[in-house]
Length: 496
Image 1 (cartoon, rainbow, N blue to C red):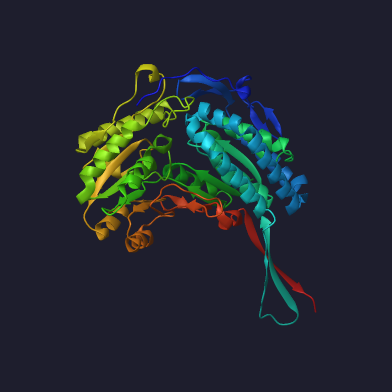
Image 2: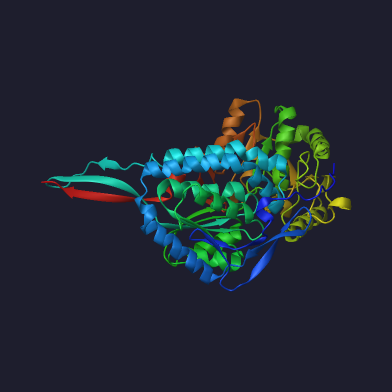
């Protein structure tokens, strides 16, 4: 079902549409004087102009972060960092509706999605506040002669460069903000050129909460220029990136300039396995929204849907019926379930894969087209289902990043596992079954950083998630994630 396009909602942050970088606590223009448009993907209309960052802008931001790291921020005690994060939590609650609306206008996700993140963001902020006072070293035994005491300390790595994706910056930035503010690192953030506004606004709120100038800086601009400069910068000690595998490979190469530490969350083509004994009343909407959620623009989307052959026809029929119940339209309509794709480029990519699927012999079972009429100005695609897909087809091998499900039949658990792992990616995966033995066998066997059983996409900040193979490495969330902002310093004390 399609939704009409409501009138654009006013937003206080957009009354001054020209935005600069945020460096040293101040909004400053690009050194080049250049800027570029950012548009609402639901309408195609320009909503703001962003500073076009260059290597020189990145230099200035990194220098600001270094000064803060070596200056006032280094004197913050764990308790003071915790108190700052608690104040941020309070500001998040107070300004959340504003942030959710800004995210909807900037990247298209419906308000029904962005507003649902209120409690999750609050949980994230409070989790990291607890970690600020939970960093500890160890006293270690040794076999050295004399009176030597040995211990380890945990110290912040320094300046972190964060390259944030466009498919949910309001959430994604917190995997960097939380770790840095908890441990005493400083940040230079480069948000995606398609969706930068919620990052700029969030960092303004951090300063309102009492964060010292220079602790978090934002340079907007294009990945090939500003992102590349940040990844290569010799003054950056660690880079965290979420995005495509191809870009991740370039960041790995760039990191060799000073042997940066890396955290990479890259592409995915996650398997979602449905057995005949699954509760279909739960599995059908669960498997559908594992892909259709955020219009398919989710790195761990379960876009390869393996269904036991005996129930394949029924499952596809029920999937198609569920897809028709979803309202697609401008996210300002609170009844909308799915918003637009982020850009014309992404729209062309998704429609291109739909065309490829039909040429390869996949059977279109639902959706498959761009939406027109009142939605023609935006980048909308119907929720799309392909049946009779083979695991060697391009739609089953390559990341589409759109609302496209590929249904692939299987006959035995061994075959399902073999097909599931026949991919270069390893980010997520799921299994739907009433049989606990089957569930545990699949959970152990699926080669991915996260596996869900009879659910999909649930993430807790105290547990986290990450990938293997060409989906990257390093966890977001959990104590291991916090440790990634620290290095171990071993101390030897002769007390004899």
